[in-house]
Image (tube, rainbow, N blue to C red):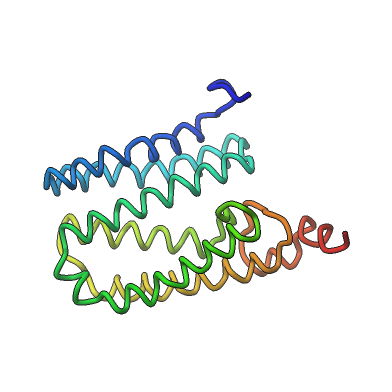
Amino acid sequence: MLTFKNYNIADWFSFYRIAAAPILLVLIWLDFRLVFTCFLLISYLTDAIDGFLARKLKITSPRGSQLDSFGDQITLIIGLMGLSYFETAFIKTNLLLILLAFIPYIIQMLIAYFKYGKATAFHTYLAKLSAVLQSVFILWSLFFIPEYVLFYIMIIIGVLETIEEITLIFMYKNWASDVKGIYWALRDKRRLKKRTH
């Protein structure tokens, strides 16, 4: 049985993002746009901090990667909910394009759960770039107004990242974390070993 002592400092930053989700939902419900955006910014910053600490202190682990991914997904969903609430007109105007980008992501999640029984945690370079663009776009939209150039770039990178994630799922027979991308996956001994069994 796991105790709190089994978790490291990077894990606790991930826990913060998960714990902050209900608070962020309440702020949306209360219509506190600026306060919500500031707290959302803190959640995004903890994502950058926990990844940096995990690499710097060499405390990366499959459990930590999965926890980080779950925290990321929760934060993204809450961010999108806030954007939908506070920028309803923008969402309605671009709903078709948003759905075209979001549906492949849902498909990727379903494939991962069907194959591995849990979400992926590849943490590719493209996934990190996509996450940064998503957070910048959401925060910019909430602090100011939605910027279409940034929106289109975010959509394109997001779709490319989803395609890469789906490709990696088919490349890895068993769940794997911290894969930099397809190029690195081709040389990954974990993938090669599992293919020979």
